[in-house]
Image (cartoon, rainbow, N blue to C red; front, side, top):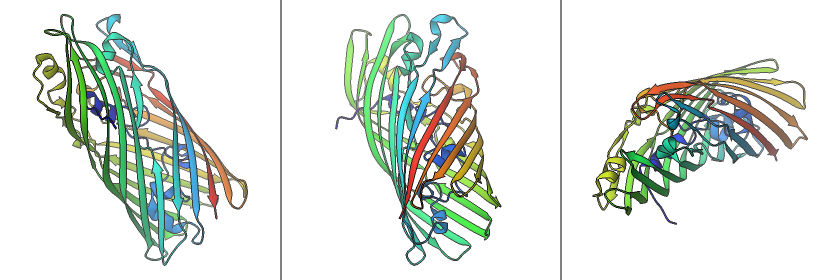
Length: 411
């Protein structure tokens, strides 16, 4: 497979999923997580616990296989940018629509062990700008990431369970940009495609001091994403120049820590979750090319370190689940998601901002073996004004709509 890499490839990696969560994450990977605004860790009790909190696999039906398949439709409305310097700098991103499939499985209990497996798409999506100034930085950014995660849980007693597992992340990216990078009329362009496979791990601990209270701690490790490939770069200065070159860059996929508690009072379960994403590992980007670039425009535009200086960010989640009767379960959620991107480095590849998430959902027990569900989430991001030399204006209308539908089969 052909691989290509340039400065923008990294921007895709971190920016493409920005409409759904702080940074690039897409936490909502199942019906329950969408319906409860991501508050699905301490309260996770189905097949999707294999991903969100594998230690909770110990509390599912001990003699049953659980298999769940979900499909999430994601709609990203246009983001508007109004520049203080005049309409020539303004822009509006394209609307985006995606379908995201996920799969989860939990095995029966074997000598206090449970085995789980999940295939998710936790990072990605896209951002496209057509107007002259924004497309200089982000004409098209797209990213797909698949996370394959087998897990093993062990129940020490009726009160404690521990789980862990390896993660295999496969990602592919495509990027193009084209515009005036130096005055007067000096242009630069890039066309990039690339992929990489990396490994990490996750661990989880669940405690049930009483039958109605569940406490959970989960951790996903930092993963260094070492992208290697080729870049096609172009400029019109001093003459028309096109360079095809090899390159590499290493960046962190940050660690994530979650602390969660869920309490059941009769038919109502309430979960409170705090997540810490360690984005401070993302300080800058350093690119290496083989051979070394010699054109001064290409060096200045694509060959120098890019400062990011992101900050660790917090997300606060509340999830509700109410068992209406033997057939119907209702769900709702709310979350506040803090952006890690400082004003000084925010640009069109990632016009991120603080967000408020609102969600609802329902599950229906079709039979003893089959349950279906649906969840809807609205991600409402704040407007954000910045002045950092490249962006000098206000980003508005950033948001996302998620609709998840799924089926769980027990046997």
